[in-house]
Figure 1 (spheres, one colour):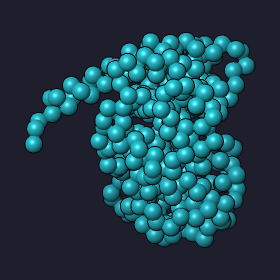
Figure 2 (cartoon, one colour):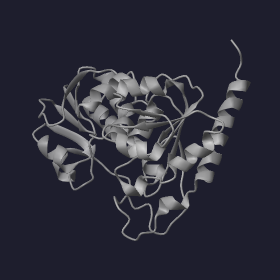
Figure 3 (cartoon, rainbow, N blue to C red):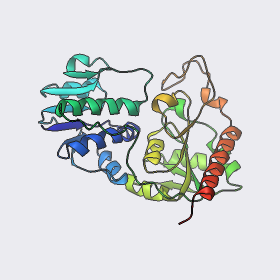
Length: 304
């Protein structure tokens, strides 16, 4: 039975879908994988099997379409396939032959895992081996070193924590600090980083190699944060308008409960600024605690 797998388009969602993709490719290594160009770099950087990569807008020829991208448009484009498995969200339940019920309080990574298990049960109804743990990406753990990586930028104001410069000033007294900028973000991050080192313009495989010496990656809720976690770097993710139980990774820090959140809005219509409730001293304290816990773990580890 031929499978076609439609991956999500954004880095964070694609990274959260890696475990589901691995479980599908382990059983169906000849499946075609469809998605954005960054997917090839993502698979290479996380030591995932590459299989056959196709553009996301290509219409496949397959027996089963596995729609990990939870959009109406993707389901519409693949409506010709005999069987179509995906989350019954965004008004597309009628376009799926085998809809998987959406759960509003479920982490996105686990939702992708349920879609993969439903697809495997459909493609191999007599198989007894279950799909892999949806939280297990299977990447090699990168060695940690001494520097702290900071990812301060997001085009979405409601997830962009405003105190990264102050955090860098507090941490730079005792640690090496590096700022990171994704494609098109260098000018924004340079304005935030000030005199601190800035790393920009890396491909995803080079980004993974560069992070191999990081002790910790401090980030907004972003694709870069999920990517850092996928390549084995400890992550501290700062949440404003988003819910760590649904889209977080690593350790989470929030400003505490607020009546209007998490809202997942691109802009704050009430002007309450939930991210401003998280001070740089609070984040710096959590960073130091995580580093101390990691150092203690290394000290207690048995020698060779």
